[in-house]
Image (cartoon, rainbow over all chains, first blue to last red; front, top):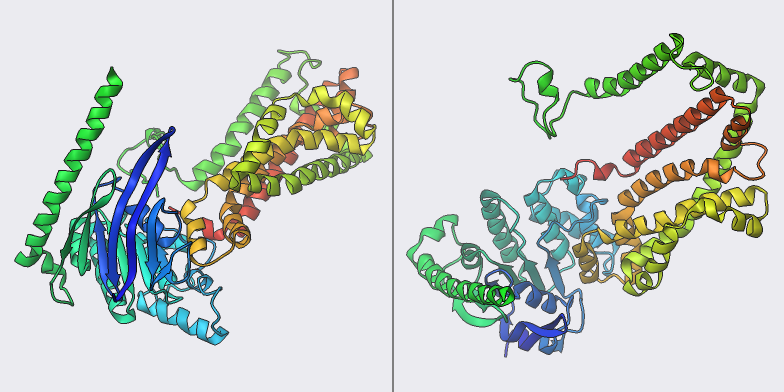
Length: 269
Length: 273
């Protein structure tokens, strides 16, 4: 009860050369309103697939995703999506990109304009509203993507390694910005990353995915107080949580490497 | 931006892998090299090293051009050829762009058309001249048909590729924002692929130009290609050379037009990367 987003036995099986390969396997998850949940796992563990299923961009082959009790059948404006690449509409300005996301909403013209202005400020892009994405740095581009995903006020924000391509300093700034925006706008966040520091720093709860097939290995609460200062990563409480997750992920990575090694050996003979 | 290394002296610093050179040098190189070739050409003919029948001098070729311009032949030829080029290329483009976009987005349409188009693409257009006469007569329609055939099948596959290479996440973003398939096609995929498609149009109109002589091979009284074929009968080498160079020159202008227009149309695409 009380969960906004529930995953119930969600699974996804792909067909690879006629053989079924499970990417995600019986994932159960309940996420409360306004909660910030990170999903971590080694690469290829199915975490992006899981996020796409929640986003309605891919179909689950088993189980069900529900938002406020209603089953997800496709993409919808109750969810915003921020992608790994800088998926902006390059031919539109910063303001144009954000405004484009409001086209399907029933707001009046004035309300739309106000929303766009509000989110330009919220992500700190004042002064760049008429720039084209091609003129912006990676961090600024991803700010546009966040504003575009939030401007129509979805209940859930889905983020697929949004800061993965940024340098370490920019990434840190973007994480702080994201927490600020999340705090101001009260939205539920599901954040996929392979960076353990990032996962712990941002989230109320970290879900560790096992690889091949992706299933939940462990859920860890992050009871650190907010707002979290950037140097919390050196805090003993933070380090303890990080250590647990790291050992989980290492175990999974080793397992999948052995699997991969096994299949190479087989293919040699 | 490529980096210029100031430390390295001499010409060597302009011959480094993938390094940029000053704009003035780049532009001058494009003028000086052809000028040198013309100089060699002039020297070879002036010194009598080849017979004028095989290679007339640059002066003779230019004089031939002046004569054609004075007599009004040049303008008549050029206008009729440009009309045929535009008609053939535009017909191809009007069909190839939508079909290519559909092929790039719907696997079923790609599956249905791609093998067929890939096969036709390799068929020699010259061999289709007899059929083209049968179908389209011997008027302008036949010339335009040949130019169309030479352009369309290449164009449609290139447009398909232009569409396929756009970022899949743009389509996903459109879906999460609540746009319908049709809206995504028109308002996201089309503008995202537009710079690539524009390049395809620029490249393919170049190919249309190269088919001009083939198109004007049969039953043509006028046209730049016709003039060249007629000159062959009288061994008028300077007419052949002038005609060929003039087609090249018009092609160069076409290319320049497309590049400049593209830069204006897709200004947002300039500082990418």
